[in-house]
Image (cartoon, rainbow over all chains, first blue to last red; front, side, top):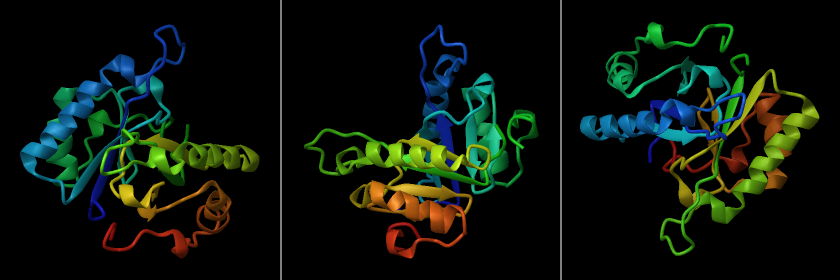
Amino acid sequence: MPKPQKHIFVCTQNRPESHPRGACSQKGCTAVFDEFMKQMQQRNLWEKISVTYSGCLGPCSQGTSVVVYPEAVMYGKVTPADVATIFDEHLMNNQVVERLRVPSDVWG
Amino acid sequence: MPKPQKHIFVCTQNRPESHPRGACSQKGCTAVFDEFMKQMQQRNLWEKISVTYSGCLGPCSQGTSVVVYPEAVMYGKVTPADVATIFDEHLMNNQVVERLRVPSDVWG
């Protein structure tokens, strides 16, 4: 496995329904992760990009949270419908998807 | 939560004992992750560094695998005894711990 040019971590943290912090598991993170993997397969990007699920990335109120390294861009409230856009604009063309970026007081 | 200066992902992937690929869960990854959190607490680095567990990072034969972003340095065969060194040398002083780095054909 080569070092990826981009490494995406998708939060898949789970917490009980009653937990005050919430969790990305309640915001559809599994479907978001699945869509990242589907796009990876369709675009055959395994040699260039890695996608990994992770524990809590911090901004639970903004779930589903997704962080892209090495540029350390955090996206929030990501849905499956957003994933192709993240590939088209950010991962393939280095244009951050500003509408999905979490507020700078959350990650800035 | 501010954007961390360093973000460490510790692989905690599990697979059945008989799986040919192995997994970091069989290499003591939970103890490695716990030691990262213990060091974070002792050094009070919550505002500067993030530590997150993750799914498979790729080089299973090198487990426990740990990747540090934004510099994308992958460490392999990490044990709890190595964690303080990673803090002292890399996370606090930007000196990569070369003896723990995975081979360049694994991640390079």
